[in-house]
Length: 134
Image (tube, rainbow, N blue to C red):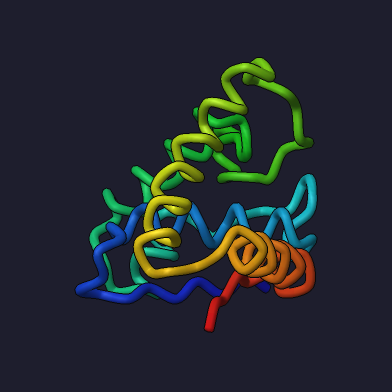
């Protein structure tokens, strides 16, 4: 069963926390193709948040081709398909990597130290479907 935990007061918007945790659960194998997601209202009630926040997260995941809505049945994980070109995928990852590298340099990390941290996080995502970080 998927467990989503939100951190109120975080710099990361709640809808983004939901998106990231669902993506991590899929990447780590906790959610597989065809698995249902909680209903919008059900998840909103569970997290004690506005249902529009969950709807926004699900909408983002649907646009990205991660889940799909089945009329009257809910949202389901879909088989991974390439909806972005290689160029777009690289652009999206670079948009995340560039600030990471800048912050690491400012904090005094060397390239090998940063690479090691990224490798550890990658391994953690693959072994911990909830995507929790310490």
